[in-house]
Length: 229
Length: 197
Image 1 (cartoon, rainbow over the protein chains, first blue to last red):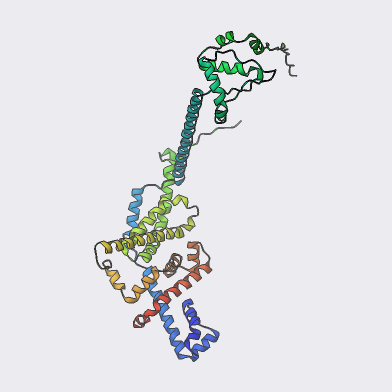
Image 2: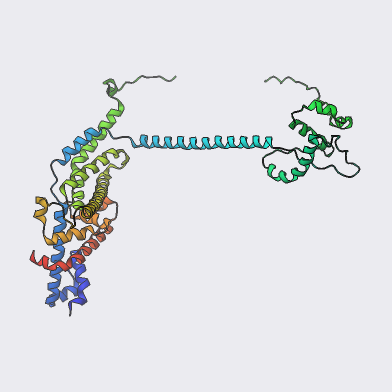
C-alpha cells in the first residue's frame, strides 16, 4: 500500500509521540517504505524537541539575581497601587469638575451679556387700539414728537421682532384697557423719564383704573400651644 | 461602663512604623519567590530572544515590574504564571523592536543584511537545522509559542503549564500538538539536514 494513504495518520502519530496501534501498526510491520517514513517523522520531531530543549533550558547567568536585588534596593518599597490610582482618580475628578464649572460660568456670562444687549435694544411690543366702541382713545401725544415716532415704529417693528425676543425677554400680561398706558410708560422709561412725571400727564380716568385697593388682611389670632402632658 | 485601655505595640515602641513593617514583609516575600522564579523569567526571555544579554535585561525588567505591582496580585500562588506572562510579553516587545532596528540599520547603513555578531554560545549551537527551527519557532502564533517553550523547559508538567497560564490541560496538550506539527511542516523540507545529524 502506498505511503500517501497513511501519511496523515503517521504524521499525527509521530507528532503526538505515541506508538501507532491497530491497523496502522499492522501496516507498518508489513510495509518497509511506510516504516522508513515513520522513522523519518519520528526523527524530525525528536530533532525539534532537542532544538526546543536547548533553546528553553539555557544556563542562567549568575549575575542575574544580584543585579535584580541591587535594582530592588534602588527601587525601594513597591508603591501602593491603590494610592496611585486613587490620586489619579481624584485628579481626574477635579479636572472634570473644574471643566464643568468653567463652562457653567462662561454660559452664565454669555447669558447675562445677551440679556444686557436685549435690554438695550428692547422696544415694547404694542398692539394697535381696537376700532370698536370699547376701545380706548389713543394716547394724547404729539404726533410730531420723538416719542410718537418711536411709538409708531414700535408698533410696526414689534410684530416682526416678537418671535426673536420671545426666547430672551419676559412678557407681561396686561389688561386690554391698560396696554396703551403701559406702552407709553415703557417708552418714557426708555427716554429716562420718571414714572410720576408720566402719571401726572396722563388721563385721570386711566389712572383711576390703575389704582389698587389696599389688601384686606384679617388679624391673626395667636393661640398658645397646649402643654405636653 | 466601657473601659478604655491604651495599647502600644512593640514595633511602634521601637520607632518602626507599620508601613515600614509591611514593606519589609513584601520585600521578604518577593525575595523568597525571586530565587525560585528568576531563572524561569530568564529562560522564557531567552527562549524568545535567543540572546543572553537581551534575555538578562528582559528578565530583570520583568522581575522589577512584578515587584512594583506585587500588591496587585491577590493570589500569590499564581506568581509564577504572572511572571511568565510579563517576561514573555516584554521579550516579544524586545524582539519586535530589535527586528525594527535591524531593518532600519540595514536600510540606512548597510547594503546587505548582516546578522548580529555571534557569541560563543551561538556558535556552539549554530547549524542549519537550528537556524530553520528558530525561524519556524518565531513564526508560530504567540499562544502556541509560550506553551511550547514552557513544555520544553525541564521540570514543567502539563498540569503546571495549565496552572501557570490559566488554561485547561486539554488546551495545553492540543497547543503543544499543533505547535509541533506546524514546526514539522516547516522543517520537513530540511530532512536532509536531519539525516546528517
